Image (cartoon, rainbow over all chains, first blue to last red; front, side, top):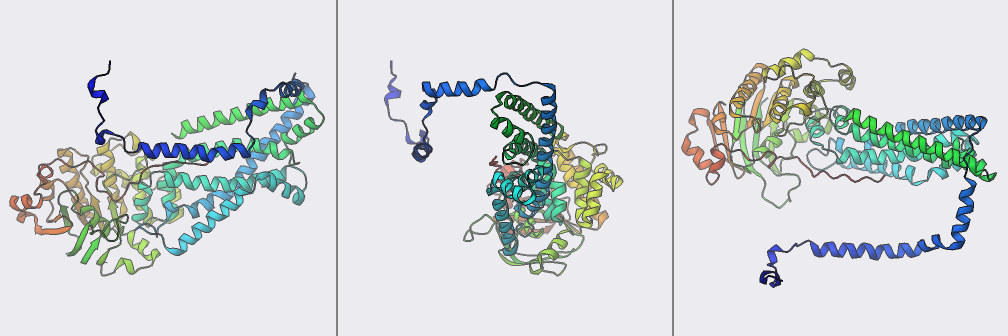
Length: 281
Length: 276
């Protein structure tokens, strides 16, 4: 059965030298994961206990049938439109925050770094902007919303401002990463030939990364729509606020209708993103 | 542009400070309007020399003077202004694939344009006729409105060369302009390049792998292992000198250029990792 060759020891040069570190990191990953599972009380089997299943069923039964009365649908449509408006306005403000900060912080546009090492002042400025972005996005939009609900009162404005700040931080970070990970050859050459930073951005970096930047922005817009639903629960307007009301009134059917509308919205954003990618590819 | 090198040595920015420089101390003068070919086997330091001249690499030791000015004593802004008078064409044409040829060519004019003018040119290109004339010189007439990724490798390389004509620079530094051109095209391209440089009154310095093409330049510099082997007029470059220059690299002398990008100063691994 076994050929004599297979029983002999494999020559050392034919052995994959990387396998030991692969095994090590696999084990290390598992060891690090274990305490996280303990800490989060990860017990999936409780999902299938008879008691849990019964209460789950009771909760879900409330959702059926979805409410489709004309007047209610009109209200949902209006609130849905408001949700999209909150997300869009929030994104527009977030872009106003993110784009200048990205342009300042991305090292792909550093002139002083061209011959090798960035100068001290540009380096400090870039780090400062990076920290500003960290602060902006590390405060969850829910907290920002709670703050702004107190400042500007209940309503969509609080939601718009909350999304603008958190998403400004996220967009700024990821835009920077996209710009820095893309092929920098064209941009570098423009800078080396004496072009300005913004010129190099518009003629080198942006055409290189436009598709990726757009698809990420549309994805974030989709996230903003979902996020504005959560913000509604703390009184920042939109479909979320309606959903909160219906939940409190135990109107499962209304919640179900709104969830379906939500799925349609997210699906729509998905198609818009795919279409934009195709156009820009 | 008058170029003076005094014991200039340079190494790649990623190289260890203790490692021997890719370009060993070199003293050299190039007069305004001169046309120079730099030849030598792979790893001779040709590209390093070119990047040092382009102010893209800071000298490890020694001094570079462009028109009597040491660029590394200038402020960042002044140096960037000086770079606007240099045109560096890397071996791999620096053209974003989704850009149109017209935009890619006109990008060479950016240092002479205000930000507003360059944005306006993105909306509706200015200097279309100039770009078309430059492309025609390199046998690319009619490619003006094509997208860069629709061009062949050779066409892209020639678009990269046509940018020089748009740049208004006093010093053209061209790295391996023929690496993806076939021999007959290569001759046409190099003639167009030298003629254009003469027309623009620019100094032209080119690294080359094709020794037969190099002798079309009035002056030929031979580099090997980062050291100057010869600095001669074209007719003084004898087969014996070439044989000595390419000893142990004879296959390159016979006209088999190495794969492009093997000694470029650019190229970082593309790694994308986003937190979404």
